[in-house]
Each structure stands twice: as C-alpha cells, then as structure tokens.
Length: 593
Image 1 (cartoon, one colour):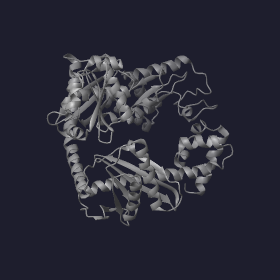
Image 2: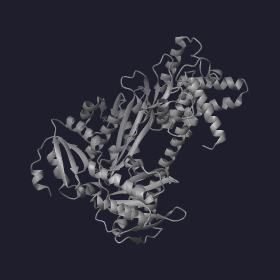
Image 3: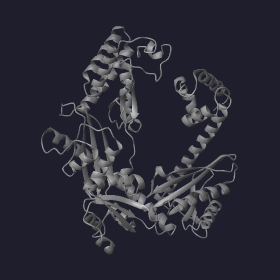
Image 4: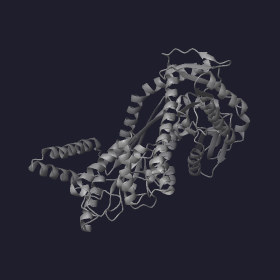
C-alpha cells in the first residue's frame, strides 16, 4: 500500500497530513524521520484507533522542516487549522480559571479565564484551577476576610459591603496606601502557599464573634478554618521551596494513554488535570503532542516542569520557554512517581467502564449500518425544527462522529419564512446545509437523520437529489408523548423494526433528544430575545446603538432581570439604567416573562 509514494519520502523531520477519500484532513502528525514514521503506518498490523485511521487513509501529504522544533510548531498550527477527527486529544480547548489580583490602585480579587488574560498584563495571577469551584470559593473566602474593593466602578456613596465591614469605602474615604499594601501582601502570601497569615486571621475573627456571643458567625469562620486545614492536609508534598511546578505522569495499556498533570503552587498540591484517550501515533509522539497542546493553550508558565524520561525536554524548552527537568532520584522523582501512580489509578478506575460503553456504542452503530445497508457510518448529522404558531421558526443540526456528539460542529438555522410549514422548513434547512457543504467542501455526512416520518424524509431526499448528493438518510418519528418511536428509511421508505430495549434504540433516542434540546434551546433564546427587543423599544434613552449592545450582552430577558445597576451602567447612563430596571420590574409584575 502506497509503495511508490513511500519510496519518495525523505529521512528528514517534518509534518504529515492523512486525508480521506473526500480530501479532508483526518490526522496531522510530526516526526524527526518522516520516511520511517509514514512507513510504519502501512506495514504490519494495527489495533484500535490506529487501525481505524489507516483504514480511512486515501492518500497523504508531508511537509519537510529544518528541525524537529519547527515540525512541532507547524504541527500545532496545522491541527488548529484543520481540527482533524483523529487528533482527539488536541480538541480540549477548555480555558482554565486563574485567580487575579488586579493591578489597580485599589485592587480587586476576581476569577478570570486564561483566554481573557491580556498580554503584558502586570496583574498577579495564581493558578490554574481546573476546578472552577475551588477558585471561586477561595476568592469568596478572601473577599470576606479582607476589605478589598468589590465594585467595578467607584460610586459616590458607601455600598452594602462597606456597612458589613467587607470594604473600606474607597469610593468616599481616603485610605492609607500602606493599609492597602498590607492587604495585598497577605493575599499574595496566601495564594503563593503561605497559609499561616490567613488561618490566624480566621482564628481571630472566630474568637471575636465568640466573645460577642454571635455563635452562628463564629461557627461560619470555624467551618472556613476546617476547610482550609483539610485542604492543606491533602496538599502536602515534600518539596518546600515554594516554587510553582507542573508534574506530568503517564500510564499506558492496551493502546490507551492516561495522562495526569499535578499543579504544585507555592509548594502545595493545588489541583490536577487528567485525561484518557486511545493512541493513534507512537507513545512518545502522543505524549509530546498532549503536553505541547497544553502549554500552547495555557500560557501562564510554572517555574519548572517535571517530566518522565520519554519526553524530549530540550524540545519543550525551545518551543515554550519552559524549565523542564527529568528527575532520576530524590524528592522530585518521588513526586513524578506520584503522578504516575495517579495516572495508573485513573486508568484502572475509568477504562473498564469506558471500554464497555465503547463496545456497546460500536455494536449499536454496526447494527444501524446493517439495517440501512450502508458501507460506512462514521459521521451522522441530525436535524430538528421548532416554531411557535409559525413564529420564531428555527432548525438545529447536531453532529455525532463515531457515536459521540461533537458540539463544535453543531449549527443553528433561523428559517426565513415565519409560518407553520414543517415540510418547507425541512426543505430550506437541508438545502442551506448541503449547499454550504458543496460550496465550502465541508466534511460530508455518512447518514442524515431528520425529525419526522415519510413526508419529511421525502423532502430531504428531494433536496439532496437536486444537489446531486448521494448521502443516505432516514427519519425518526415520535409518538404522541413526544418520545422516540420508529425509524423510517430505505428505498422505498418503510418502518424499520428495532427492539425498543436494544442499545441501538437507546443510542437513537439519545441522538434525537440531543438535537431536540439543542433546537428548543435556540428557539427559546430567539423568543426571549424578541420579547426583550420589544421591551427595549419602550424605554426612553435606549436607541438602536444601546439596544444592540444590550441584546448582544444579555440575549435573554432572564439574564436582563439578573443584571445589577452596576452591570447596566457599563452600557447605559445611570438614570436610564434606573428607569429601565423600574420598567422591567413593573413589566414582570404584570406579565410572566
């Protein structure tokens, strides 16, 4: 297979792109020896995801680079550009939260996402916190203990926080800068790993309220102290140098890779990131790709990173400016072993269940493929329609690849005609979707599932025929209780019998519920936005510009009701904001929004 093409590949570093029969990039990889790596795919036998990848490869391309470092950076960019389906591990674009002490004259303590951190920002950042609740709880606790500024903007009178002792009234009082510096110093010290100052402050508060016989408040501070002590006990590690470090461990078995990153901040184990995924490439490449993606996505770097021997430390240093250490003995080796043990434990906990679910899903997809007489069933696109007596007419599309939802490929369609005509709605959405597929050469579905019976399915097939697209299609009918009931398909169209207790029926039900909920959510959003737009037309001082800003920020009436005066003042003058809040309150009393 590919004997002539492989003979031309050089023994040089570079990136390679695997493509399927439609010309879509399905995998991007790198190697310091392109010929050896590419040859390995097409010689010998493979299992798992690698076997599936090789089966789908129609041809490949490669790009020679001057170094392995250049290949690594090119690979990162190519994966971002093409988002290939087999590069599963690099799809995690989650932005972890950090705790930020702002660089204002009177600082605030807030939770921020890395994606929102401005470059060259001189604020103090602490984290990351994969557990966002932990970050928020920490900020809430420190804001209660220290009279920091809580407001985004300065008011002309003291707020509630001032009267309950959680703010010094910076808006109306001149506060000694030395006092502010002391607060900053203690907070930074705590977030950097020195918890003694804060625990002593909590003990003092607890005693004060106890002396006043305000036992409920004293109990609150006791619980706060207990939580910190429990957390500190869990965080104990043997390195006492107060450095920020990441520790990366892995465990592999049966062609699956479990990775665990321990976040040690200020000498304390703060949190962790963990993942399990099937390998497509070699162990070295999969692990390096995972780490590269993590540090490319999360730009706040620790003082040092501890990695196992298998990692090319110098390559990571060159690519991301990290201090990378491969400890062989001592305390740091013990911490690295701890990361390994965590990775192994997580693998053993999760894989039995994951493999069972994978087998069930694959069996269900194989059954559906046989029922519908399909050659391939990888990508399924499902459609649903929604309207309210012909108003706010919308459609939604969800995508499942290998039986798993791919939310980044979900699409919303606002239908042009506001009338209750399900057939024309189906005609419009199918045409718009697959005309775009042809025009932009997007990945094509192996199966289209529409919500409805023979009528809706016939409409969809007519549109596909007019576009000269040979894509299999079927329909899912619901019963009078709006539950999945029957599968219709084949040619001529007929009901396809499925055992309602089978894994296939459960999978189809899950898919239909997913597209229904996605579409209904969009429909409700448009309805709420439409109602909000009408409300805004009745407020003096809100013209088209301010109206668009409010609609863009809040989108729904419920979010608008939750907005504070301070929030609204970011868009509206104070008097207009007050008038609007008053109007909305009166409107809400007269009508259930």
